[in-house]
Amino acid sequence: MPIPTSLSPSSGRLAALGLAAALLGLLGGCAGNAPQAQGGTTARAVAPASTEPQQFKLANGLTVIVKPDHRAPTAVQMLWVRAGAYDEVDGTSGVAHVLEHMMFKGTAKLKPGEFSRQVALLGGRENAFTSYDHTGYYQQVPAGHLPDVMALESDRFAHNQWSDDEFAKELEVVKEERRMRTDDNPRALLREQLYAAAFVASPYHRPVVGWMGDLDSLQADDVRHFWQRWYVPANAALVVAGDVEPKQVLAWAEKTYGGIPARAVPERKPRPEPPQPGERRVQVKAPAEQAAVYLAFKVPRLTGVEPSPDNDDALALTVLSAVLDGYQGARLDRALTQGPDRVADAAGAGNGLVGRGPQLFMLSGVPAQGKTAAQVEAALRAQVKKIADEGVSAAELARVKTQWVASQVYERDSVMAQAQSLGSNWVQGLPLDADDRLIERLKTVTAAQVQAVAKKYFGDDQLTVATLLPQPRDPNWRPRKPPAGARLEDMH
Image 1 (cartoon, rainbow, N blue to C red):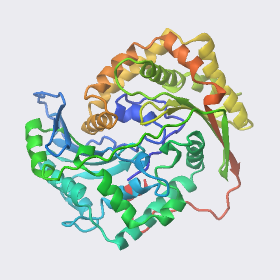
Image 2: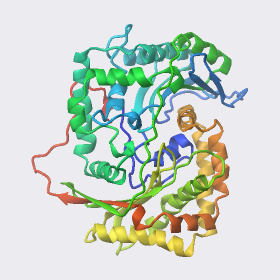
Image 3: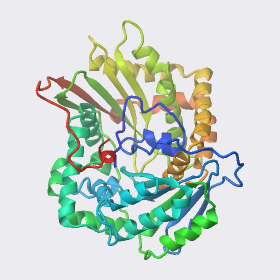
Image 4: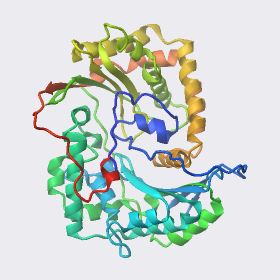
């Protein structure tokens, strides 16, 4: 049940352009460790009857999205809940992620851990993920066992049940996960402090895993109340992709999920982030071998596929990030990390495209030996200024656009990626065909638009800088090991 590890130096490399695989991957703090495609099934030489996704809504408000793909006898079920760290209140940070853990701890029918054992007996794999904006659960099984995992998932969605003792044990697992992934990881700690500095009112201020102080005081009823409040059919989407027929899946959904009582989705109060009045800086001292620097500029989010000033700028910023860091030998690679006088061992860029509030355009770098974080910061900003002054070439634009089209085709080879993309689109309120339409929109972004956003969004007043100051590591320090009894998937 991994926590997203966003803002990596390579986050701007668009390996695939579905909102699931790439666009949300650029969303700071929201890009979960998405389920990865796996092989192992034998492809069938049968042309699909229809591969267009279809969307339905049950009487209780649950959205059902089905994407047929008959090339292999496998199916993916994903349940997306439009609730994550963004929906937490002060003092309970981390509760969305803790609930994700507790969803594996039993129902009135199943004992703790029995859900995972049942999926394994069906020949499947399963996991879950939490981000700022959503929580997701998935299973991939032989297609004939899809009704079985639909029954399992609907049961725990509606009847999650566990003891206070079980909660206390799992909370310690979550705390250890935080220690392993954040407290003992200097760059993750730096990212956490960056977000805390960049956002003062937005819930993006808080880490998805939660502050340790909040985890220490979290109560079992805090988690139960979050589940009761947000895990309602009208706030969730069931996504199925694979060797299935939409009408049959709808019938199974009616049988398994249709009996869950309808309830209203609680009203969400706006949480606007006030304008940033000036540059912000934060330094983090932590045991590390190398320094690092992250530069975060506030930028608009994508709110739909239709043209608008903010949507147009959000897409142009995504193209800018790819020109800087979208392929091997891109601008940051050439200018900062190559040659005997290179200033950085690594450098990257990424644009947070979608979310519920303002996003961050990230520049990041790790100084080369003999170089400083300040030099890397200056070099990163110089590359953006160069684009603002001189623009980008037609060849650069053509290259990143060609990569996106090709990667979109590659993504469709995986039923897991297809389900992930459709669920991501739903979470953000985008249509089923958002990927195709956004690809077309991105293909129309011009060099002038890229140059314009490079001029517009990279001033000091929109900037937060976080710098890692390496400290000596205790010679007796050893990496932490997962706590006894923890699921390995929880800790990877």
